[in-house]
Image 1 (cartoon, one colour):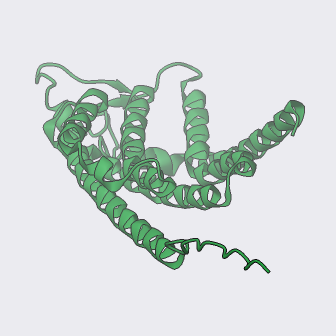
Image 2 (cartoon, one colour):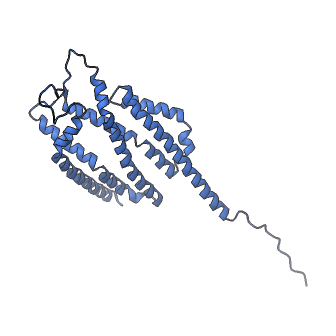
Image 3 (cartoon, helix red, strand yellow):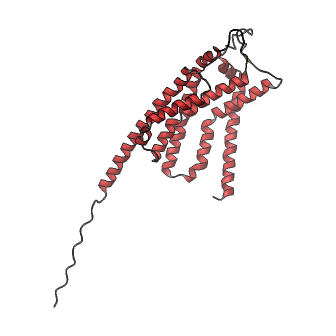
Length: 266
């Protein structure tokens, strides 16, 4: 298509993605109280807190603070919950330029990316209470620790996003193997550097500095890395056997040429 048609197609995909984000943002607006209670649960129980001693760590400041927080929570809820829909819009925009095999692999990538991201987000929320308890333990007994809920929300979302994105590592490796860019041996050969890279990534980008949280992310990533390499080896084995069958079925040799006999002279 011409450039203007591509831009119109991109505009349509963006509008559709924004529509789904808006719909789920309305859902986040309606369940705002439940979302806040769930996010604040590692710090305090908002349902049973009756005074500042039970839940005095989190606070909202400013006249527009409550409204801005509700808008932010609603928008982020819309982006996270509508992820399968805007991921499909991205795929639908680039799909016409892909081959049939690449389209099939891209669909598998989108289908697998969502549950892996959800698994990483669930693991992050599971270790969140432990991380909060460890980090709050560094507060001196003579001092109080007041945390703005906006800062706390950024901390929680960073933890969830880092865990979710990190869990996409095996999906990327397997997808590259299916396309033929990486082989299983190429994935597993630098396993020492891979373990070091995973550990460095966790230590550098994890918002928590406690060893328990970093180990909770590093150990599953290392296991998923080796699992992706094992799947790559199986795919390579099947690909090699399929190519061997094709080569066996094709003619292996050409009949030797025989000289043409000259006609006898009359």
